Length: 335
Image (cartoon, rainbow, N blue to C red; front, top):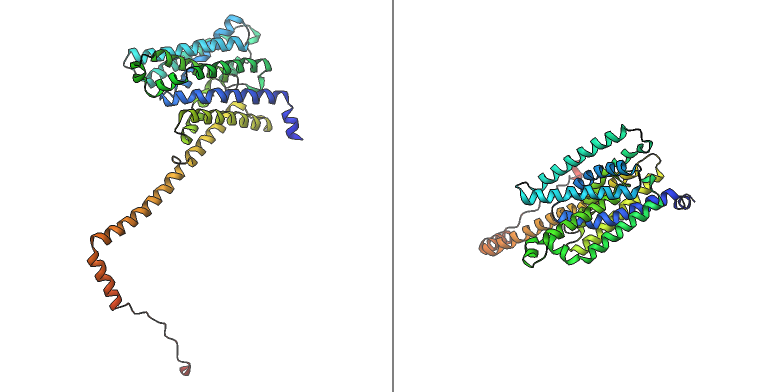
């Protein structure tokens, strides 16, 4: 009866659908970021979305989800493109470029947020909730916007699947084939920004980076093929979202966004321990199997290199067997 009441709850339905959409889009796109060694890309874009949220509120005067998504996408994509420009046109490495963009845009966002809180606009109340997410405030109209962004993003990924895969694994070879590798990389980065935009309402600016990295990191342990990895990452994202939303609803007072992230982290830890071929337990078992095999080979090597010694040892043992000491029983007459 409790589960039936839970499934019929309007807020729970919105949160679960929104969390599922978040996992569906963040898992596959996070795989490309992880494989391109840009795991901090989601962190930089999510922090860079804060100025877009503030600018959207300043321009429109409301917290409309459509305007906030457009503003977040604009500033997040701008930060990602600046990062690509810094790494291509200067001697900065990718991690340094990500750090510069992350700190710069987040600082601007904090300044704008402080300015908004000092104004007399009553609608600014609760705007800081986008820092950590506010899943319970998700409306059915928000879900339509999130679903549309997810559909467009995944359709774009399917249309440029071959190009994205080639650029991810060998960008230089893609350039020799005449592909616009830079444009494809920029498109992939913009799609990661779209994933971040979808997750702002659910987990917020701060925790969104985990939803980009965690499902991809877990899926990487279970598969060596990109297509299978993307499917597993999407599944991990959906399971994390639904599980976190359910735990948050059943445990009153616990925030949904952090629980979603903690669930995804738990799946990553289980994958690191149990994944076949790569898991920690698999490595321990393989170590002991190899140790036993090595001992057998050492014995065979000794038999092969020193047959005379082995024959003499066997002959000596056969001619002079070791005496077996039998216990001496007491004489019953001496008692």
